[in-house]
Image (cartoon, rainbow, N blue to C red; front, side, top):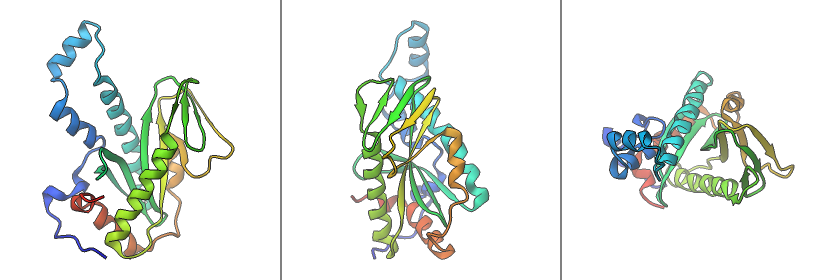
Length: 212
């Protein structure tokens, strides 16, 4: 088991707001608010529009997850991924750990299979496969620093969609619409209270995620 240094304020991911990873990227490389308003006024789209759309989705799902605190769950947002990007949300409690990935597709019809998703019948996106890979990564990091088995399951949450269809064989990834994440609330029996505290202490420490 690898030990982490004492947690500092700078390394405490519990301070992150939903969408923290996107906010950081936009602050570093995105257009200023004035430039974005000017572009919208002129009817111009931007490569950063998807970031703003994703940010809205992460904030809404983040609010739904934070309501699960009433069931004893802990939530983290914008957890750095040592392989690049970030993990939208981590939900930690007696029911285990859930790696939550948010996808916003306003008004879309979504079909999700074992590894891929199709939006309005278009080209496949590897949403399910990516979610499973992300959960495996999270499990490796947590177990490295906890010293015991940590069950981690992938979750995909779709926001603002019109319809959602799942393949009959899709069981490896939890698939929800925004308001359905409350189904995770009553889950229990995977981690005891001491283990929950230890997993959360590791997960909130930025330095745990600095190695792949």
